[in-house]
Image (cartoon, rainbow, N blue to C red; front, top):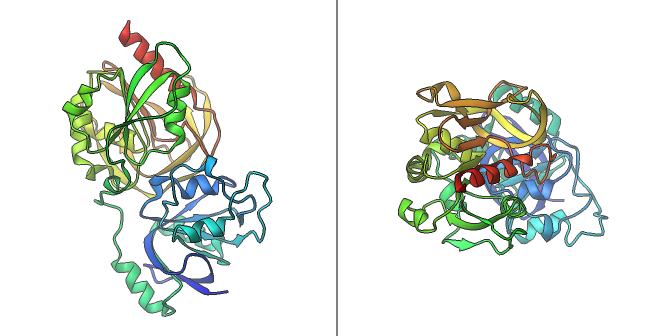
Length: 365
C-alpha cells in the first residue's frame, strides 16, 4: 500500500497507509467521537477546511449509499481512521468508503494511532495539518502545515452555499404549510427534510441573499443553517439577520446560532478543540432534562457579550458549560448550537422543529 504522512504544525508526524485519492491536502485537524455515520460526517459541508479523525477504530464496514449523504460529495478536506474495514457488508451499500472517496478526489489515511492523535488534540487543541501521499519529507510537510490557512477569519460559507434561490422539492404533508426561507450556509440535506415533515414549504436561499430579496419571498419564518468556518467572516449575512429580528420567527442551528448571536450584538470565540460527535450531553434549562446531542462546531457564542437583557440562554453543554441554545424574550427568535436533525446521532432534540412551527402559528394568528 502507498505510504501517507499526516504532519501537524507542532512537529508531530504520523505515518500510515493511503486510501482514497492520491495527493496532498491541508486543513485543521479535529476528532469526531461518533461510532457510526461516517458518510454523513464526511459529506457534511460544515467540515469544509477540516481533516476529520474518527476516534472509533474500525470505519467503513457498511459502505456508502446516496440516501444517507448530507451533500452531493465529500466535504471534509481529508479523512483519518485507525483501520479501514476490508469489506462492506450492508445490503444498502452502493460503494465502499474507499471507492467513494477515490471517486471524489478525497485524500485519506489509515493505520495511524488515532488514540494518540486524539489525546494530542485534546491537550494542545485543534492543529493545522497536512496529509500527503506524494511528499515523504516529514520536515517539509510540517513547514507546510505551519504555513497553511487556518479557520479563524476565513469565509468558508461562500464556498458551500447554493448559487441561487430555489424551492426544496419535497412537499409538506399539511394543507396550509408555513413558508420558510432557509439560508444555506452549508446546510445538511436532512434539515430541509425535517422542516418539511414539520409542515413547512421550504425555499432555499444562498448566504449572499439581500434583505430585499428575502422579504420578496414573503416568508412566515426564517431558518439559518449550519456551515463551516468563522461566523464573523459572514458579514453580509449577519447584517441581513439583524434586519430580520422582530420581523418574523427565526430559528438558527449551529453556524446559524452563531450568526444570530453576532446579529444581536454578541461575540463568538474559537473553542480549543471543538465539539464533534453524536454523544454530547446538553441540559435544557427550561425543563431540566438532559438531551444527548449531535454536534459539529469549532466556534461558540459568548452569551454574556450580548448587550441588554432580552436574550437568555436555554441550553447548556454539560461537558464544558458552553452556550448550546438561546431565545429572545421579546422577538420570536431562538437557536441551538447542536444539531437537532441528527443524521447521524440521537433524535432527542427533534422537537425544536415543531417549536419553530408553533412560533409561526402564533405569529400568523
